[in-house]
Image (cartoon, rainbow, N blue to C red; front, side):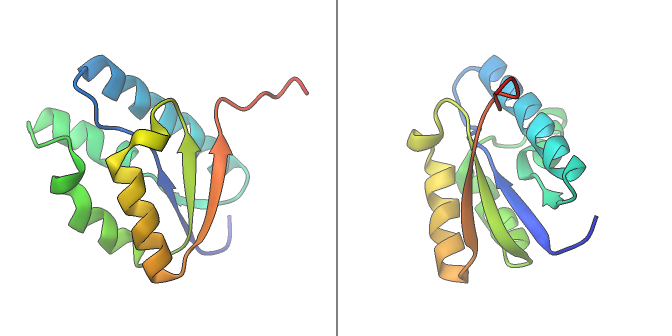
Length: 117
């Protein structure tokens, strides 16, 4: 792996803990795929979901914004994982705004990837 850090934005917040957990699993899969392709990936959901669950921390963007912004300041690009709910995600909207403020490149990753084509 070589190159700068990529921030993986994933929809997360949801009233149903099962949905949050499924989004965590998909974030891990997408981060792993990007790593296999040679990217240095920071996946905030992969990092914070287990901590939030274990320590009963808040699960919403308002709590995690400062944490995510600090990481984004070290990234050159944000990749948005297009899971169900991403267009309505308050967190992704805010992450995109931060990306624009920081001048980060923005890419969108359709998911799941259809590898049969």
